Length: 159
Image (tube, rainbow, N blue to C red; front, side):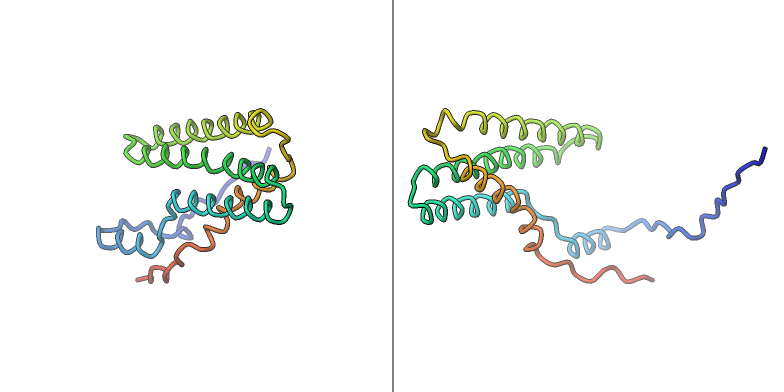
């Protein structure tokens, strides 16, 4: 029976270089992070615009409120998730931070589902199409926020 051999030559892999404090700071400046609060603010702004546009185009206040509620079903859970994530920054280990991420993600999903289930009871004559439009458009804002974040600066020059 033939034996498989694997080439374990690691010369093709880039060499790991530990950064000093100045290099780490420069790296962080070249690759800015996107604040979750900025995403939530963009979502709230787009949700408001969708609700006003729906109300203006349909001349129906129920459709406007339905679109606004759809946006709120994204914004409120996202704000709670952002608050929870920012509290995880001080986690003792990476494992506990990851567990916290999953817990807050599940809280966000559960709150979103609860808000959508409660919608027909909270808005009389609910317009599901307007609610769905407000929900989907507001949810997709995180992609726009990623595009509009500060641009990356040039990468690290190789020595």
